[in-house]
Image (cartoon, rainbow, N blue to C red; front, side, top):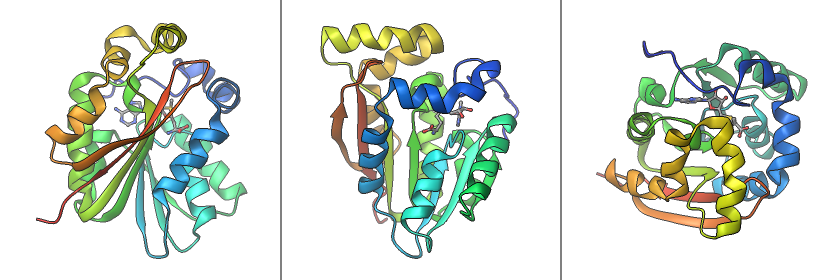
Length: 219
Ligand SMILES: C[S@@+](CC[C@H](N)C(=O)[O-])C[C@H]1O[C@@H](n2cnc3c(N)ncnc32)[C@H](O)[C@@H]1O
């Protein structure tokens, strides 16, 4: 894991982590966007999938349940949230690995993964980590591998902008504002991804969540 150990925990404050799953269910239309992200990721037998900022492991478990013959690895800097993720996976009888680390540590096993996924992570990390994280995720993918991201993205209407202020109060303006201005696809292209697409925009009471897909092209 990288030396800089500062990060925003799942629910904004460490003492709120036990309430994270409940808050996400209530405040983000969770079934809607997680279902869309799962359909987009479309795990197949033999896939090697890395979930960056896996949090309590909900999406990693969904991936494994959808395709038990896929190999799933969860990565997160927070030891507490990883304990919760391991417990959730064990309860679901979903065999997978969890590693402690930041998005910028995704390439610890370079060119290993066929798919890299991430949900609700980049809006709460600083600009330099957004860039370094996406670059590392590019290197973690095999040529021809795909990136699948769900996160608060460009807030297109005054209503969604106003709704997103709740997240900005919780996670800080400096980290969240670039997402609200639509920076993620630009950064994906900057670090080398091609075929970058915003595939869906889902309105929620905390702002709109965008789904993105991108490709690490063959050399
Ligand atoms: C809002 S939670 C999302 C968790 C999970 N992906 C989900 O869909 O529920 C954000 C997660 O990102 C992790 N995180 C924060 N900074 C990070 C970074 N720089 N790199 C990777 N993960 C980070 C936090 O520890 C937290 O678990």
